[in-house]
Image 1 (cartoon, rainbow, N blue to C red):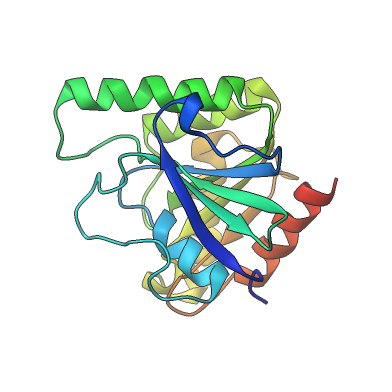
Image 2: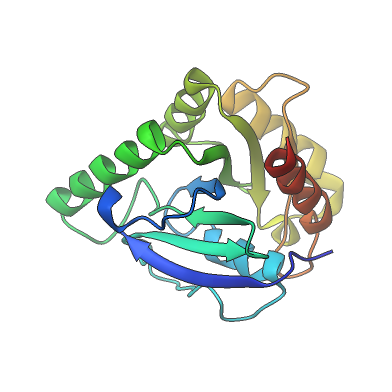
Length: 195
């Protein structure tokens, strides 16, 4: 199952540039190079809708994608390591925080982490921030195809423990390569938008 008619809409760094129209939004947050662009491409069933890169820090703006002309996915710049200066990272932090704290259309946040590695302090901080503000939230553990299926449970527990997730909190194991987890995540996204 893929999302219908996903189109890139615009990029922004300040509220005056955000799209108008009042459509509900779900933001994608995660470390640099965790796979946000690949996730968008898989959900949209398009190869090059969102630009992917092997270079961390490629996404430097809030990128808005309109889904079926009824809601939006918003790709946030990655946190953590990026080959940019401290001043630019600080600037990203300001406009990301401004969006997450003040955007009334924001209905939920999907946090991406790499299934292969324990969550970082930045991952934990983001998870606690999302929890504090009370948004509908899910965690997507990417790159599941890089780990043997028999190890998925162990790595899932590592993610849950590392983030301090409650047992009932949604966790999706995802692979952009195979499509693992895409259908379940799509159903979750649509349930949040329709709530």
